[in-house]
View 1 (cartoon, one colour):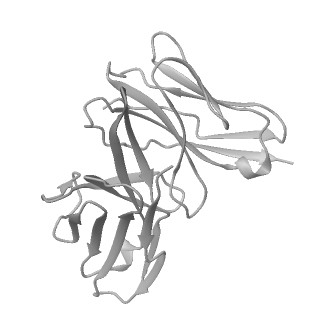
View 2 (cartoon, rainbow over the protein chains, first blue to last red):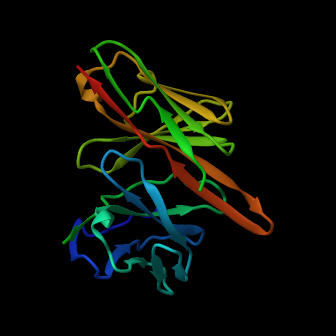
Length: 112
Length: 121
């Protein structure tokens, strides 16, 4: 299983764009990259998933370089409600064999 | 997205008693569910993989006789913490795998429940 490395914490002011980078040097060919958001005392919530290049949805963008050894979650114009822990996970979804292992996550604090 | 529920949302019990936590996939069938444990300020730790109709697969260091998992149907998995002790106090989270084909598009996602906070006195 590919191990992921993320910054432990980040601070940002309201309205700014936040980029959280995750390293996954041992990512396998069948691995997808998935990001989750977790608020205190709640289960993780799916944000975005991608395999390569760029993926965008209504809440975030995910940038994945050609070598796929890292990925960057981009949150546009964060608000106070975006304060949470963000987890980057890597897993094989093609064979359905992936068990998602959580790394340390990045604790994002949005400041007024 | 698909919805996963957990019951109860919180429970307080005396040391030595057993506690059952339910995980349900409300609008999809899940042949595979997962149980995680999370201590304060820490990440989620995978405890076991629950497969419908078969025995659960436990991660290293997780006692299968203490954490009993039953996945009797495609929408329900239960985790029973037997003879609970204060060190078992934690936030227990389940997830359910939602996989299949939508036309030619293959999908495989995990949806998480809201968690159950267990406090053992």
